[in-house]
Image (cartoon, rainbow, N blue to C red; front, side, top):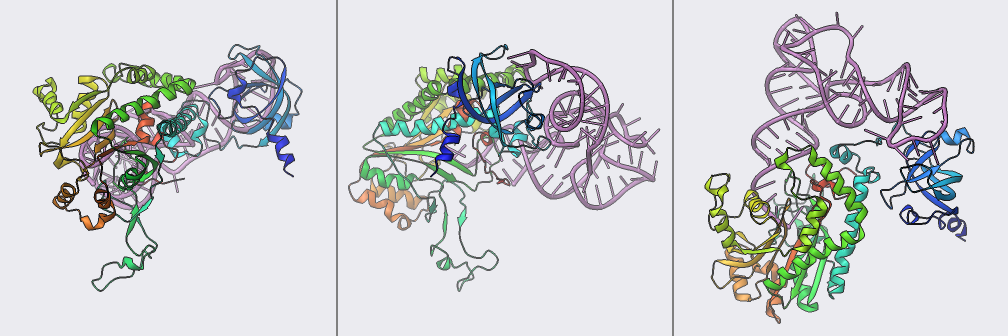
Amino acid sequence: MHSNFYSMFNKRTKIKDLLSFTPDNQFVTVMGWVRTFRNSQFIALNDGSTNTNLQIVVTLGTQPDDILKRIVTSSALKITGKLVPSLGKGQSLELNCETLEILGDSDAEKYPLQPKKHSLEFLREIAHLRFRTNTFGSVFRIRHSLAFAIHQFFNEKGFIYLHTPIITSSDAEGAGEMFRVSTLPLDNPPKDLNGNIDFSEDFFGRPTNLTVSGQLEGELAATAFGDIYTFGPTFRAENSNTTRHLAEFWMIEPEMAFNDLEDNMNLAEEFIQYLITYVLDHNAEDLSFLDQRLSEEEKLLPADKRSELSLLQKLRFVIDNKFERITYTEAIDILLQSPAYKKKKFQYDVKWGIDMQSEHERYLVEKHFKKPVIVTNYPKDIKAFYMRQNDDGTTVAAMDILAPGIGEIVGGSQREERLDLLTKRMTEMHINPDELWWYLDTRKFGTVPHAGFGLGFERMVLFVTGMTNIRDVIPFPRTPKSAEF
RNA sequence: UCCUCAGUAGCUCAGUUGGUUAGAGCAUCUGACUGUUAAUCAGAGGGUCACUGGUUCAAGUCCAGUCUGAGGAGCCA
């Protein structure tokens, strides 16, 4: 009964596929949106499968004027014709139009995209249309590839994909400010005898929030399945206004039983290199477009602000070289010995025990090692309660991976599996063990050494695409004062 | 949240020590041309100078506040 629909759409050839055909007068049908219409003859048609437009040639006199007038930038067309070698210079093949159908008209006067460079700030204001630009076409095809590669990587290794809750009732994770989830009336919430809001009348009968991390739930599953990973949205209500932070972002959090810090680092490094390799193999055209885009952007910068490597060179460098591995203590020593420190170039002081500032991390990664760096064994006082305490009594088995241009891209640790040490640490850090009774049960019923890490998905997309603002690698960014679309 | 910078046509921008009717390129529309490649050529339309208040004979221009955006910092992924 749906045959009419099939007959209309199932003959469509995607432009990406069509471009690899040998043109031989074969009939094909394409559908897409007009990028430009030149000379009342040449349509540059884009269907989103690739940045390369297909040139449609409309022979003069073969289409009525009223149809030609409706072919404007962004109108949607269905075209059937013969695929032939191009007579023009800009492309190797073109489609000679035989039948042309306008699937959707467009109001060219109101359509905001022009065939010229737009600022990324402007395109952010029209995020619903920016997919139709080459830059965002490439970025979001690569984002898709990365997401797919993530699942493939873990699936190949026998990890279970675990869906952790979006709405949580624990506020003990300490990963940041949370968004409250409630159905209570904002203007007149029920109060208890002390005048506080009575959450027992709320939807869940208790205060709930959007998750800031799936890690604790991940550990529950890892201590049953062995290896799990999460990949889902995460929410932080921090008032962060930077090029690296979002209020809603996606995070990948693998958690592995019978793993220590060393295993954890090995997996994280292999993971990152796998993802980059996957995109180099599957998105060559998009990467090459972004590579060119970035080098043109950098031409506008002063010489000392330009990167030494192009985007493609940088990606190949990262997969061809081992990440540098140093301890926190060694990192502090390097900073103390650095010319930058001796010349007092750092705004913040360096000494053992500090939480390294952006300028320190950037120095290690971009000036000293010039490659991704894994820093391990941080002081316990600047890290979370669940990290495994080292025998020295002062550090924990944590690891951060710092990437050039991004800073921290991965944060992970071996987890504290010893119940007594864990509850002692929670008490020291004013976290009520009773609220996390379910978490502590894993340490009571067959506890094992385990480890895991979190990778910020958008930061990975930033790194791979060479984009510089995190708002440009997620379709609809949520940041303070901004939740349009 | 803090610091710095910015906001003029649909977009990217210019706008002199405060001074008559606020300009350009691109886009759009109309016409010409017809193997173009961000086509080209000619013409036309298009403005609450972010908002509110103040100073002044006079404010796009100076001052204050607000809003929004960008960069950096903090927090972090």
